[in-house]
Length: 168
Image (cartoon, rainbow, N blue to C red; front, side, top):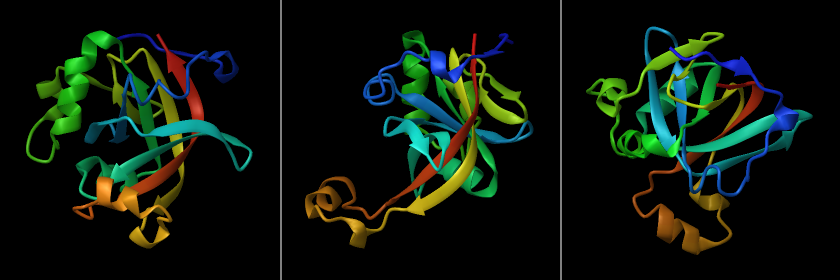
């Protein structure tokens, strides 16, 4: 297992537009006994309700959504480029009927009881603050619905307070 240390959030030097969209990340939820992880490329960071936050989007059909919905915490983890195949695997496989962690070549770890992949180099540990379903009626640009939701597998937006940033 790697050693992670708290990292001051005001020292982060990342591009908020490419960190998720180009490099991707893993969202992980559950506990030490059972967790699931999935790849995300939509979301961001910012300040909301006076807190440093992440916001992520999870489709209704995703297995990881069950863990986020039923828990208080989740992690958003960034891995180096050498784990690109693992990120691809975690974005294409559910984990409902298999050990996704081992199939992806990843090792589940926990910090403060929050699961994350040990192979990560930067982890945001988050407390869920809000879950906001994205509904068809909320789109003012109907082309988005046609392009991204033709199967009506909608997203829920989760807002999580960043309670700690950990790095190795």
